[in-house]
Amino acid sequence: MQTSGEVVPFPQAAHEAPRDFRLFFEDEHLGLLKLLHFVTGDRSEAADLMQEAFLKLWERWDRISTIDDPRAYLFRVALNGSRSRARAARRAAKHVLPFGVANDPFDDVDIREDVRRMLLKVTPRQRAALVLLDLYGYGSEDAGRIMGIRPSTVRALATQGRAALRIHGSPHE
Image (tube, rainbow, N blue to C red; front, side, top):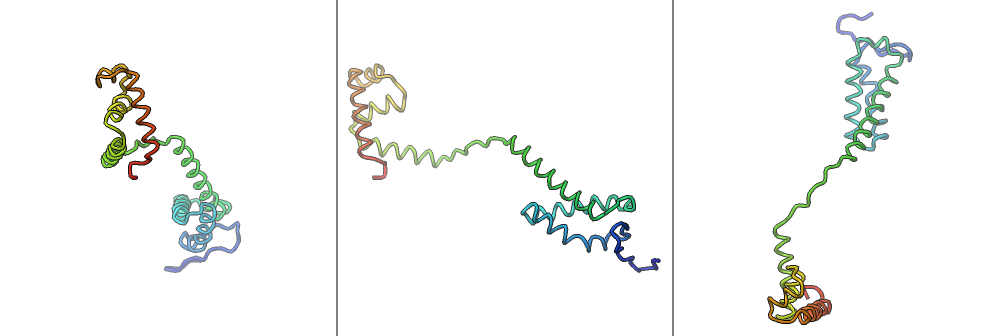
């Protein structure tokens, strides 16, 4: 019998329903937290799942006498929550939004400077042929007209320029 201010202790028999939620929480929360930490591998995730499981049990606490084993119910709710989160994470992973590559203007400056340094390693005519053919995408006919030379000469200059670039290596050498 409970008197004013006295808390009824948690019953010893497994089939008896506990009468005080606070005592039930105090008796079970560390064991549930350890179980969930072992299952999830993450203490924060385990703590969240534990709180959610206790909240669901607390919401049904007025009907606790209808639950055969409140501890088993609590553990089942917590483990179901863990599986639900894992399924939600797998579903979310399937619908990952592609992130665009951030264009850093300093990278563009670095690339332009590297190309400029590389092109300075070849003759001005080879450089002009490479720029017109490879950077601007002109054909050898058009590049020859622009440079005032035959298309075959443009191709020869570009070939010589590429060979020189391969020999000289990186722009920082």
